[in-house]
Image 1 (cartoon, rainbow, N blue to C red):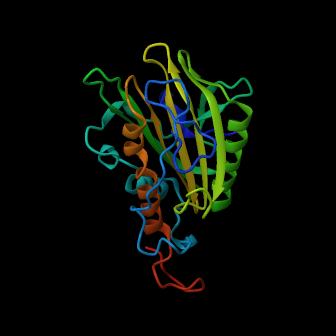
Image 2 (cartoon, rainbow, N blue to C red):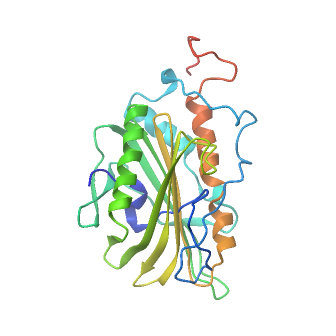
Image 3 (cartoon, rainbow, N blue to C red):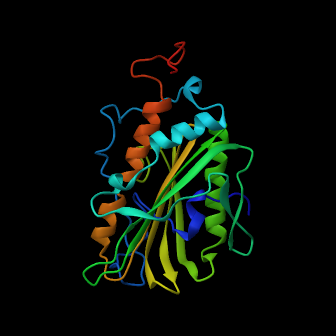
Length: 274
């Protein structure tokens, strides 16, 4: 196995969004895979029906530019909604991401040469009212080229298909994983060039489980963005859906605003960078 997603850093599990065919419905405390959230599209721009065109002149060329872009794009707790707080640790080491080995164990390794910068932020909905805590995350990685970003997406799909059960770290596991990939216009994907979806269960020696687990990651130009959710005791599918359904489309809209061609610009128009 090759590269993996920074979304796994710190043991925070990934979530699946969009339309994932074949999922069975389940409640937050159950062991079955819950139906993933369906993006409503309300976070998209007025021109969402048209495929956005990225402007190479506006894409980051250095690590510093990539880090600045990530700070403008990545989610904070407010993007998930009320009641969501920063988790501890809050941010991952920007110089590392996780790699899935042939033994289906995740390990941290230095950021590869085809990536300029990456960052994962971890969030939680605290336990309350007899319900367990919910864990969430958001990740943005900026690659040197759009082709590099597409290769990351392809490698991840291959890894997920090879490992339907994964160990994130001692006592933290993902089970019953199912993955699908959708091009723009397929499976409810209206935000990214390519959307990768995963669903299953997250199990913890300390938090219990299995709980519903969803992960979604999309590519837009040289940027890869993803969001995740791992349920908790007594949390319903509706609760989990409401937390993640809009987050990835909003981050991708920010990417489009940062590195997309201005509205009305022709493909051959010079400039457009900022």
